[in-house]
Image 1 (cartoon, rainbow over the protein chains, first blue to last red):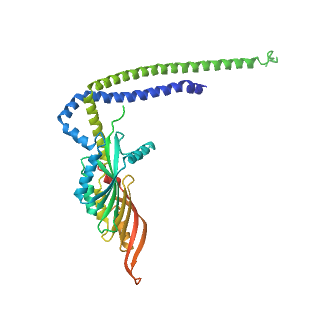
Image 2: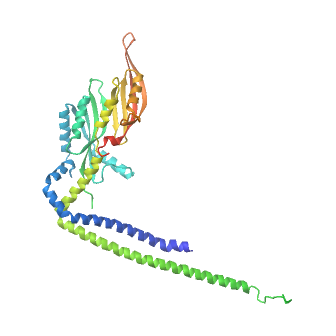
Image 3: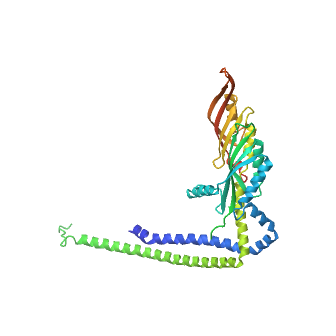
Length: 179
Length: 199
């Protein structure tokens, strides 16, 4: 009977108390973060005003809007510097986002932060192996943060010393967290 | 004992007394347990009300801080945006992919007679599908042994597994072999941390 009383009367109340405790803990943590932010805001505004170039650099590395044209320019410059030829560029942003969203839904580890929207293109590059190496190095030096996330290299049977590489170039834009 | 037989004139009264006593004991225990539960419930209820009060207070302070941040408007948004992007870039850089270690190791480890005709790399899973040509089967074996990491000679490739080897022969009109090569396919696993900047 005491067990029945415990479950019927006390357990729901204990459950409610635990839920409120967790809520308070989360809100206190958020409050501490926001208070710390507010305390240092004046200082940060002053730093940003003084070091505006860092903000501009960040706009290039991780812009708030897509700015796909920046990536096209980087690919063009890398292709020119390498001496190879970029034959095809396909926008595969929606495919990348769908794949990441499904992995998140399945609870699998996703390397892209939640505040970042991944974008991407798939491209074909043709040239010698050395030209491909230069192309990859040039992409790596891009001021816009981008990753060659997948790479396939095939030797061209018809042309000696020629390879075709198909690669996925992934780049990012900042997606402000929803309040 | 003294010769007089004890006679119970009200048979069952002793049993009834025992039953009453037991019932009283049950009532007493029930009352005690109910009282204890009531006391604990009361204590918990008061504690719950205190917590709800505390939550309201935290919410009030949070709303005040948010209102102050909103009052600061564009400047606060600018700082929030900057900090958010900086944190995101930091995360992205720790997983930023560089192909140099992978390709350098591949170039260094391939025996000269082996020619790679196909490489398919999956960075997420750390898997490579490799296709190539060699003049003989022994070079296929040398290629796989050279690529796979050993304790004394570590490489980026943790393992190398042969998928298949096919002899490809070209004959002249007379049916004599003019060239023989061996096409092979292999699967390799590699350490993805070595192609990521922050690891």
